[in-house]
Image 1 (spheres, each protein chain N blue to C red):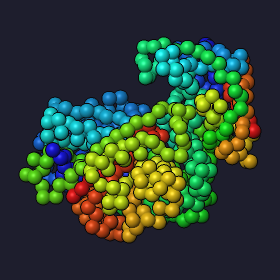
Image 2 (cartoon, rainbow over the protein chains, first blue to last red):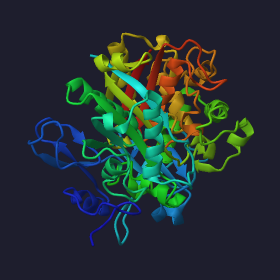
Image 3 (cartoon, rainbow over the protein chains, first blue to last red):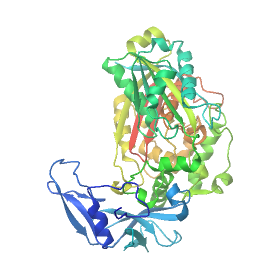
Image 4 (cartoon, one colour):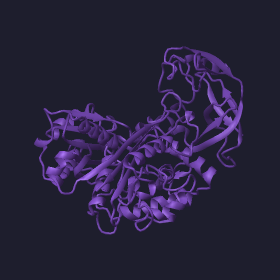
Length: 133
Length: 382
């Protein structure tokens, strides 16, 4: 049983396992297409534009970004009922990619456009991404 | 060559403890055949829209329909495009007729969502997001549209009261529609005090789980003229798609697939937004109808909340005067064909008292799959 990221993984196999391994070491790594230079986040092992060019991995260094949106989920899927309520956010990093995570704390005092830190926590079964004001 | 709608029908939408998937499909199919006075034997192919095998716990549900509706041994094609399955089914049938490979066809959409318990159903629907990259955070379908709502409210000062006005309007008209799941008007207090599902969306911002079916009989222009005096013509059919993950969307306050599909549809039908006399738009959540007004060009970006009062009969463009997804219900596979039935009867002047858009000549259907993963637009003319 490999590492999983987030709170529960429904898809257990991928050519992008390196993402989770790097995240467990608190590095954000993702891919870009060798031919057209498009960046993918979350990482992809295949470029849907070039189709056969190949991809390369690189590191995203930023740990702070702008909050694009968020929501506090109350009615949750079965695997998440025990965690309800939880707040999911999307933050845009200076590299032009958007990352999803759980907001630390509640949505009180949270506004679209706020600056949030990206915090990666390493756990026994795999890493988790948090966003904090 | 134009394609005509010559018959439409639907089952009552709601929590149908009295009927299962195949029986609901039969109700709608019989109603559509009776509407045009034809029999299943005359149909040369069927197109079946069912969004999920999981809810009704039946794999290859298209095959079940081939049997129960009396289609076999003729062709039947099962179509899926999430919540836009009904319109995808309509468009596929239209393409088959235009290709000349089939001439008189049945398009049937059906979903049985209430057989499993609510938590299970919510779990299934949540798999409509990116299961590899978003589901690890416990995202849900209401959560996705809640993210859209939060961004829209921040950018354009849309409020929870504005969202509530959509639910109020759609219940106002659902109350006049005997086929609707909910036939009672609701108040602002009721909407604002409802339990929260995913902030800022509460129970009354969300369309329900629904059992139901809707069907249509379609044919070529040539054959339609021999079969009926009241064909409704499909003047435009368009579709566009978008990225799987919300993380890949440039903006969260609009659905680019709807904008792209609308642009193509208006061009095909040679009309502008203001020429539309009546519309059904995809209000899976209240915010989705406000965003639809903007994406469809009924009003400018951000001013959807000010258009709501124009979406009543007597206003600039009556929208969802059948109750919408919110009050009429949203059986995933049936919804798009339910919209087709509604626009068809509006153009024929056959809608129930209090919900007929007067003198309607041009109607529009806007049917979205997922969080704007698909958007299908059809424009009909009488």
